[in-house]
Each structure stands twice: as C-alpha cells, then as structure tokens.
Length: 182
View (cartoon, rainbow, N blue to C red):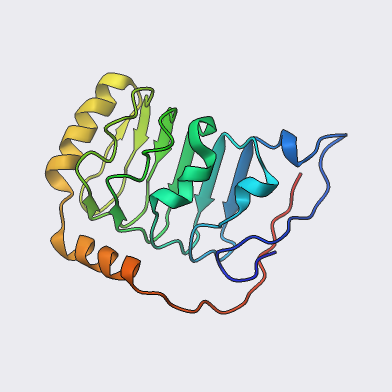
C-alpha cells in the first residue's frame, strides 16, 4: 500500500513456507502504475539485492532512490519506463552493482561519470534508448559501451527538464498500489 504514488506504507501477502520479508532478495514490479520510485521499500525488505521496475510510469531516478540499498544491491532493472536522464551520482552508493538494465526507457542524457565507480559491473543493457542502443555482457564490452554512452547521451534539453523537475515540489494524489508477495 502507498500513501501516495511514492511512499510505501505497508506490504501484504503470504511468503512461501516459513520465509519472511527479511528473506526477500528480489523485488519485481510490473505495470503497477508507479509514477516514481517507491520510497521506504528497504524498511520492509532489508536484504534486497535485486530491483526490477518494468512498464511503470517512473519518470526519473535520483541518488536517494537507490541509496537505501547501498552495497547490497547487485542487480537493477528499469525496463520500459519514461526515464530520460541518468544523473552522475545515481549509482554512487550502490558500487557493488554487477548488472544494470536501462532497456526500453527514453534515455536522452547520461551525466558524465554515472557509471564511474562500478568496478563490478559486467552487464549493462541499454537497447533501445534514443541516445544510445546497445548491450554489453562482459567487463570489456561494458567499458566500451560506457564510453559510447558518454559521447552520445548529452541532450541539454533533457537535463534542463530533469533539473527543473528536481526543483519543483508537487502534490501527488493518494492511491493504493498492490503487489503480491510469493
């Protein structure tokens, strides 16, 4: 449940056997209508290593979205969301990421250094995106893809729009989102 589109206030559903929320390592949401990254997820699932957001309405990501998962986060998917910008500090606190999929988004700008401190990153999926399409599935390919991304993904209009959204506070209508835990 959510008090708004962004803040998780409760989770419900049965777990398999005697597992609990502490045993959950993978969170997957698909077409549930999230318009922003859900806050407080880490309070319910303290040991998440993998996050997947597919076909949601998430329009932007910030460092504070991933920060609560820190060094535990190994895999991150944002698939087919209308995200246009990847900020330089997005992955600053999640340096153990091994896999990132930003496939099917609307990425037009990736700030320089966004992937800089991800020494364990061995898979980076970006196909398709407006500024650069391509997938890399080993460390050498990842480094080449990052270099191409830094050359091709620098849309000034997209970053200005992103910065404007960051500085604007808007009221979000109250809604309830449901996810089934198995």
